[in-house]
Length: 281
Image (cartoon, rainbow, N blue to C red; front, top):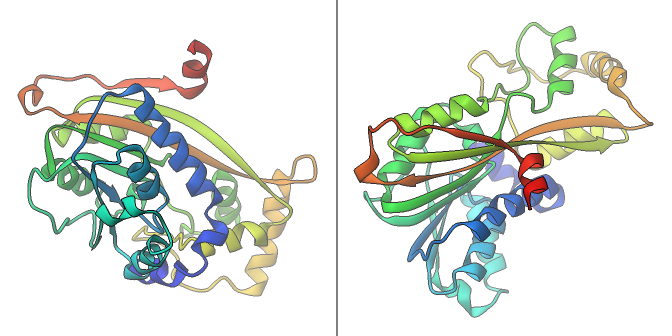
């Protein structure tokens, strides 16, 4: 996975339209949350879209970027040199969310957009994030749910016995992980985004361009041969609608608090539909 993301650094910005859209939606939650963070960390920061927005919003804060891929950080550093002065307070850390090279109680706001789903041990990810947060700190994140790329998953299932597409945690599992990791008052929202393609190969290019990979232990490690690719395209064609091939993404957006005095008191998870929330406004 680390090698894939390092290779993808040079192509990432050409294919990350979904990542940018989800990061924007996730950051919009800050409009309804009152915080004045001093230290912020962007976990799985990629090329720095989230970090840049956070630095703009919280001009007095120190914004740190963490990514497992050094090439991603180097790309972001190059972009930083072309940016405004407020980026001088941004720091960069090469590390793994599952084992953060960071001291306890270091951050007031932890942000992560579409990075947590790549972890092999999601419970460890959440515990590590909780460990590095200051009391009263906010964890704001987005991740992918189990309906993500369902068309691709179903098409692969017809031609192969081994999984080729990641399995993702559902919204209730995410809420349970937050609570068991010591977070309080988790609020989770679910939405579906459908990206339309002219053909399957365009989807595959986008996935490769952002470094997306299957981290399942049972995953197929062989290359997809020409014969299998043709069969896969035939199966995926069954999903064609109005001359386009859909690719579904189930996006889970959530936040929770690092409130030491509430730990272990049976906090409840709250689940909402983004559509319902929009109708309330």
